[in-house]
Image (cartoon, rainbow, N blue to C red; front, side, top):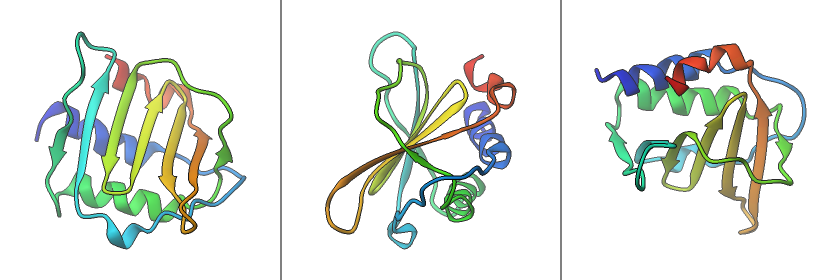
Length: 126
C-alpha cells in the first residue's frame, strides 16, 4: 500500500465529530474515489482509490459515521492539503479543517466544514 493511501486511511481513523449541521450526501451512490495532494508544483493529478479497498471502505464508513457536526462554510480555504474526489462530492482537508462539497437532493450546492485537531493531520503535510 502506498504511503499516500496509508495517510488517507489514518486520516479517516483520526477525524473526530463535533456539533452543527448534518450532511445529506447519498453514500449509496459512491462508486469511485480519487485523491490528490495539493501544494505541489503543477496541477495535481488525482490518483484512484481501488473500489472495495480498505481506504475506499474507510472513507465511506467515515462519511456515514460523521453525518453530523458540520457547519456551513462561508469562505474559501488557502491552497494545500489533500482532496478526495467522489462521484458526487469532494472532501478537502487543509490544516485542521475538513471541507465537504456536494449537491443536495434539491440540486443546491452545499459547502460544509468541520474542525479536526491540527496535530492529528500534521502527517498529511510532510
